[in-house]
Length: 503
Image 1 (cartoon, rainbow, N blue to C red):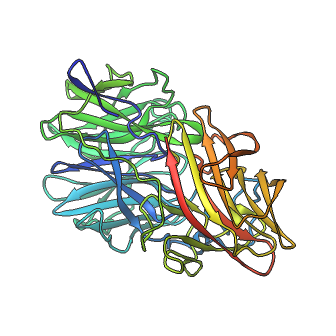
Image 2 (tube, rainbow, N blue to C red; image 1 turned 180 degrees about the vertical axis):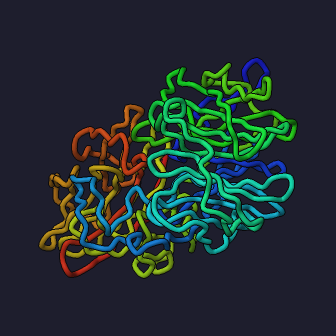
């Protein structure tokens, strides 16, 4: 957040304390746009926008649904339980979906490219990044590709660079100018397992006659950011480490480079932060001898003079009173939803979710989630319980590995307040009320304490112990979620009145 120190505007990192991993960023006019990995959540590929590179809000999504494979609709049977997080199995795509998208603006169109590890490399275009995007075009079919980035050269020729699952090597294709067709099978242009281990996330730029590839190396947790350059796009490339671990950041890497209208350079990257996911930091970039120097001479900055643009008041959307007829941009579903089983119009002012049949929460349809914001959050939601059926579960989760939750289990006509972690349910009390208010307090130590109340003003009573959140959950952080599912044959529903987030 920006503030004034001795008359100078500064910002503090992280600029986005939320799991927008593998960020890529561009500027068009005075607006900045950022895309990030969304994996198995739907809609896919959030598009964030900013006016100052520090304050961001969600503008839209590229993918209304994940239509790459039937497993994105959650097709049982599958081996996952709430206690067992892998192997995922063929019926699900946890950790699949969208990996490391890139965004570019060319000839009046926004382009986004992404890979799904099981299906291939895709692209989509839009005139307005907040509007409707074109149906995805399959650019390269097959499993095992990752992290594509397009590049249009000064002569109009187009290229695509990508890596492979397992992180490396770097592969270059010639591509049609419309970005839809590859002209060749690809040429390996970067492969050096000694000096460039776990090469991934390449982003291509051109500056002062050099072709640059910005790429993280060394892995998610502890890798630095490399920059490679060459006078020709197919190499050979020489290497420079532009950003190294430091100032408490073990792995400051993978992101996008952008310049303000005045030419100031900036690099947005992630740093892996356990249950909060991979959060976004902003580093200043200066150029020396045609090499980018990031942060403070290669060390990440914790605070710095703000970019030389006017500050804005954008912020990520979170709380929702469910008063709209369309789903807020902050929301996504765990895998594709069953759109016949949720509604904002059946009971205006409420989100109605009908229970799907499942043995476990990780296999339930229509779990509604949003990205957790740090360094701490207080999440509160009110649910009406009149529609519950026997064996139905409903509640508030910090959705991730072991799926801890607090909520209601209905058995033989009685509602029981229940705490669950790793599939082990503990009944707390009978609930005779027609509604319950559930709260989850997530602290900087990445723990959650659930509580409940029967009145908005409280009092709140703890539900279950302080619970440690998983450090990584299918490539994502933990996510606040409302859910319902039923183990029996008769399905009921819940009406979610509101969902409020405080930081």
